[in-house]
Figure 1 (cartoon, rainbow, N blue to C red):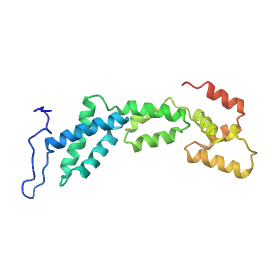
Figure 2 (figure 1 turned 180 degrees about the vertical axis):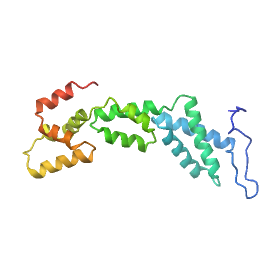
Figure 3 (figure 1 turned 120 degrees about the horizontal axis):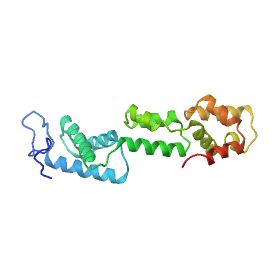
Length: 196
C-alpha cells in the first residue's frame, strides 16, 4: 500500500545514532494492517482491544521498537479498521448487551464489562436502555436453580447463598428478593414474554 497521503507511510526510518525512530517503517505498517485484519476476522473487537493487542504484539515482534512507533502502529491499526468499517463500538456494545441479557447478566455487570473493554460511558448507557434486570435475574435463577427453579428445600444457609449469588452478579437486593418470592409459573411467564 503506497498511499503518499498517509502520515505513517514513509521510507524505512532506522534509528539515527541514539535518537529512536518516531515513524514506523513500511514493514511495521504492513504487519499492523495484516495483524488487524487477522484479529478482526477472528472476532469482533472494540477500538481499545484492537489498539492494545497491536501495541502488545508490536513490542514482541520488533526489536528495538520505540514507544512512539508502538503508539503509531496502534493508531494506524485502529484507523485502518475504521476505514474498512470493521470497528464499531456502538454495535459491539449493543450485541454484548443483548447476549448478556439472554444469558442472565445484570445491567451493572454488563456496564462494567463494556467499560473494561474501553467502550465510552455514553455508548454503554445507550446500549443498556432497553435492558430488564428482572428478566436477567430470572434467567440467572433458572441457570443456577435458584428461587422458583430451586430443586431442594429452602433453609437459611441456602437462602443466604442465593442472595449472595444475586449480589455478586450485580443484581440489587430488591430484584433478588422479587425473584426468590416468585412462583415457577410467574418466572416462566416473564421468560416467555421476553423479546428474543
